[in-house]
Every structure is written in C-alpha cells, then in structure tokens.
Image (cartoon, rainbow, N blue to C red; front, side):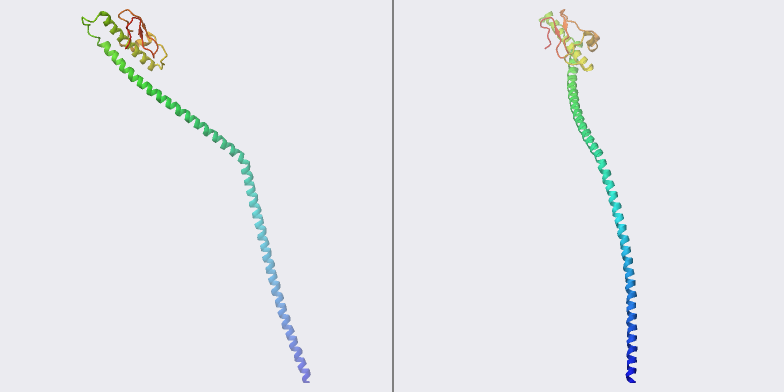
Length: 220
C-alpha cells in the first residue's frame, strides 16, 4: 500500500515537473517569438532606412552628375570668355603704351614750342624796341651806307620774329614759307618793311633767316 502511495506521489511530482517544464518551455517560446518579431521589425526598419539612404545617395549622385554635366557643357563658353578677356587685356595694354608714347611726344613738343615761343617773344621785343627807338643819327664818321645796313638788319629781325609767331599760331613747320601778307599782322605798324638801300627781301622758310639782296645786309 505504501508502495502504491509512493508511486502515486512520484507520478504527481513528475507530472507537476513536466507541467512546470512545459510552462517554462512555452514561456521561452513566447519570449523567443516576441524577440523574433522585434528582430524582424528592426530588420524591416533597417531595410527601410537602407532603402531610403540608397534613394538619397542615388538622388545626390544624379544631382551631382547633372551639375558636372552642366559645368562641362559651360566650360567651352568660360574658356572663350577667358580668351576674349586676355585678348582685350593685351589690346588695352598696347593702347595704353601707345597713348603713353603719344603723351610723351605731345609733352616734348609742347615744351619745345614753349621754348621757341619764349625765344621768339624776346626777339620780337628786341625788334620792336629797335623799331620804336631807331638809332641816333650817324656820327660824322658813320657813312650813309652803314646807317642803311643797320636799318636793314633791324627789318630782317622783324621779319624773322614775325615768321616765328606766324608758325606758332598756324601750326607750321620749319619748312613752310609764308608770304608778305601772312607776316603783315605780326609786324609793328602793319606794314611790311623795305630795305633803305633798295634791296629785295627773301622771306624764306620758317627755319631759315630772311635775306636781303644787298651785300652785307645779313642778320648776325
């Protein structure tokens, strides 16, 4: 009888142990299924993120490729603009050098003309002073010929000064030859002088001294 009771209890204990193990197994199975579902959900989320990242990368690559293509298409135009700017810069430099040279030439010419003008003004003043203050009557030792020679030389000086003024005001060169009518406005009294000895005047070019046909009547 005791043996039967012991066996019954043993079976009950075994049953209970089996039930406990089965409960634990079911619980672990439920937890494993829940963990699997969580892992699957995480995997799905990660896959969605990966797909989104791939899409973003693909879109960025497409945009960058489009930009590079646009830059590549615009590169010839930019090169042409750079070439044009370089040519324009060279032209401007050449024009600047030319203008600088022209300015130097103009300044040099202006300085020369200023010096000539100052010289001519002095000579004209001297000629005018000689005309306004004729030499005193010759002394008994001075002959009539000497007096006429001095008067003729003063006339030649007036003609020379008038030529220089005419050249400056009319932009003439040393090779230009004026007429008596051209010089009359620049001669004191508005009358072209005449040689007191009856000589003939040769006006000559601007760069040359006027001459008289009478021997000895020469500007010093």
